Amino acid sequence: MDYLPIFLNIRDRRVVVDGGTTVAARRAERALDCGAQVVLFDPHPGDEVLALQNRDGLVIHHRVPDETDMDDCAVAWGASEDDARDTRLSEWCRARNIPCNIADRPDLCDFITPSIVDRSPIVVAISTGGTAPVIARILRARIEATLPAAFGRLAEFASGFRADIARTIASGRERRHFWERLIDGPAGDFFLSGAVDRARAQIEDDLEATASGRARPVGEVYLVGAGPGDPDLLTFRALRLMQRADVVLYDRLVGDEIMSLVRRDAERIYVGKLSKEHTMQQEDISKLMVRLAREGRRVLRLKGGDPYIFGRGGEEIEELAASGIAFQVVPGITAASGAGTYAGIPLTHRDHAQSCLFVTAHGKDGVLDLDWDVLIRPKQTVAIYMGLSNLPVLVKGFADRGVDMTTPVAVIQNGTRPDQRVVTAPLSDIAGEVAEAGMKSPCMIIIGSVVALREKLAWTNLDRTAHAMGLAAETTPDITA
Image (tube, one colour):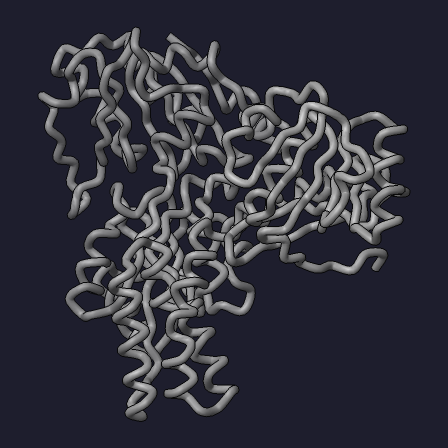
């Protein structure tokens, strides 16, 4: 390790920044955020420096610094892009034992300015010792993506209970476990979701239960939408809860790539369903979640797409609410949006469709029961879930009601995944083309003139990838009306 990582308190202390560049502006901004009194020198400061001139604590001198300007300085940054000027600043600082950093001159630096992830009071600093700043920025972006924005506020909130926890729990080990449950359990989840009062009540109840000796494991359920298949489409919250769960209940629409992101030691229970072939009845899934949560386990119910759009998530949550089980719901990108986007088909377009209708062709008891008056309205896109087996019936229904049979239709199999396949054809021909292609569920059906935009707007190479994986070209016809 070439540098000692430290966090320096510069609040109300004098900090010198020499330069009017973008780098100088970022250094001044960071010091101001830490409460420093910043003095910046440059004869002709740039726009980004001038944009800071109304910040409290900043003084800008339109000149180069001289040696006396270093008096009482705690830290100095040089960012003038003038070698002689930067070298002079470094010499002045070393003569006074002032920590100094010169941009892009590691030989003149006493310290490295790291990339920062700010979740104050939590701060993560990343450095490559000045050798590869781009790598530090990439790592910062990845940490930004996984660390909830409100995590710092959670730390401040939780610190308000420090005295109560110390007074209630004598054992250091038990206190540590209590803190872990607080931050990484229901109270922390309530706070991060904005339910501050519920978080406070949860902590107070947990403390009371601990003091009275009646504390018992408390589980909860996370109902998480896994999206249409591409793991890059998961939300940050979904990833966080997937890493926390003790047990995961997943369906057939959740692929291996997404399951690989679940905590490795979590128990996995498959509860997937096919049409007329149910591994587990819906009522049994709901009861299983209740039982596991009552055992004190954190249960991840992972569903393809969005759990509240034809995912029966509402039914499962009703059972949890009735049983007094704590739960969270995380939305996912629904199949119509994901599959349409990856196939190059916008669901709405000013020239084609001013509305989009989501329907399922699979009813409660497997019976097709659709409101045809709504389906055949002009200037709209119809996105049909779970309709592959009923496609001939759907086509006949549109035909019987006088819909233009040249209307373009797309059937998208495994949308957003590497093996995505798309068949497009006029409404009159789509059932036959899909049968000839041997399309299998899961498939999304999109009906409307927006489908005609596919050739112009397609931006992924998933269809070509599928072909390269061995899907013969003749089995994936693409006949766009």
